[in-house]
Structures are given as structure tokens and as C-alpha cells.
Image (cartoon, rainbow, N blue to C red; front, side, top):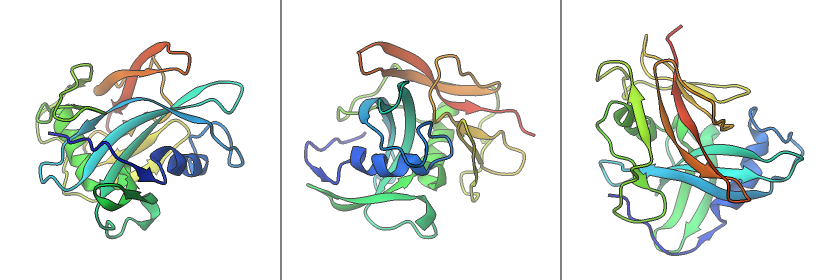
Length: 215
């Protein structure tokens, strides 16, 4: 079960995301923008080996005329992930665990394997900020058989204007991380749905992940 340490991180996750988000093609503020971020929701998954932290974190950006909610799927590692230099969000000093390498989880096989397990009913979502606590607000569904995705396959990742598409194995349905969250978003083959909050406290609920039809 996820263990949440009440300690410091320097730089903070929000500071790292402030620099990283404008480099993404789905960020709405433009490459020169300076985001004004606030944590707005999310959940965690457990690494069966207990080595890698897995978090799906929503942040709201109030820098522009319109508030947008973005999904950052992140992994936290005690050492660099070989071959994933392009996916590094940044490093931080954790008050308990020491140096942590934070990656965009769309490129991390541990996150992708547990995401597939969640869709197939083999993983249980965990509360984002409370240790040893499941999150019953997370709804995962998939219209297909177990073993659909090959978690051992090298992920094929494509960034677009609305999200990040990941293919795990030939012929498997692509997984789309819905980076710009939308209450109306739904996947034709399945989804992971849960909530987030706007800066004024208004609650929203929609798909963090969509399972697409194979093409």
C-alpha cells in the first residue's frame, strides 16, 4: 500500500511542473508562459516491487484567461531510468528518501504496467495523500480480455494537442492520457475516471485515461 511521507521536497513537484508543462504540445498557455499552478486532485498506484512511486496528479493553471486542469502522470525513482533521459521532469531532494528522479510516466514501464493492471481489475487505486488507503472514487473499466497489453514491450509514445497516446504491444488498444482534463471525455473501449477541483472549489469529474480503438 502507498506510504505518504510528511516531509519536504526541494524543488517541489509544482515548481518542476511549472518548468515542464510549457514544453508539452498539449499545454494551452504557450511556450513562453509561466504557469500559476495549484494541486487539484489525483490518485496513486502501488509498484508491486515497492521501488517506484506512481502518481497521477492534477494541477490547475490560472495564468491565462481560462483555467485549465492538466494531468501529470509521474514516477519517482531512487536512480535514473536507463534510456529515459528525454522523459525526465526533474530531480528533487526528498526529506526522507533523498534524491528522487521524477519522470513522465508515459515513458515508464512500471507506471504503464500498473495502469494496464488497473484497467483489467488487477490493481487497486490508492489515495493521493493518505497512506495505506484505497481511493473508491476512481472508476476503471475496459471492454476487453485480461492480458491485452504487453507491459514488457517498449512503449511507443506519441504526444498530441489533447493528450499522450501510448501503445503497449502490437495490436493492443492505445492508451491516451487525457492531459487537458474534460468532464465530457470518454474512451470507446474503456477509461479511468475520477475527480479534481477548480481553484474556486468547484468539483469536476472526468476521464484521466481513455482506451482507444486500435487503428
